[in-house]
Length: 132
Image (cartoon, rainbow, N blue to C red):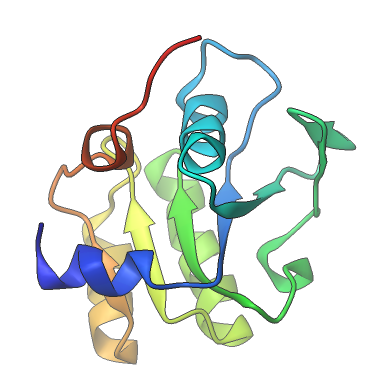
C-alpha cells in the first residue's frame, strides 16, 4: 500500500462523491466497501435523500467537519468541479477512482497540496470489497 493511500485511509470519516442508489454502480460499491470495513462514510448525491440507508449530503461543502478524505466516482469533467469544492472545503485527501481521473483535477490537487490518488488504484481492491 502506498503512503498516499495509507494517509487517505487514516481519516475519521469519508465522503463518497457520486454515491448511487443503484447497487450495480461503482458509486454504490465504494460506499458499501467503506461500510464493510467498518468505516464511517457519507454519500454525496444531490438527487437522492439516502443511499444504503445513510442520509446523503448534496455537495462536498455539506460534508461534516470530520471528513478529510473523499472518494470521487464521477465523470472527469465533474471531478474537476468536485476538486475545486473539496479544496474550498479543506479536504486534504482525494481518491479519484478509475475512470474519474482528469489531468486538470490531478494538477489542481497537486498545486493545492492535496494528497491525491489517481493512479488507477481502486478502493474496492485495496480494502477488499465483497459483493453481497
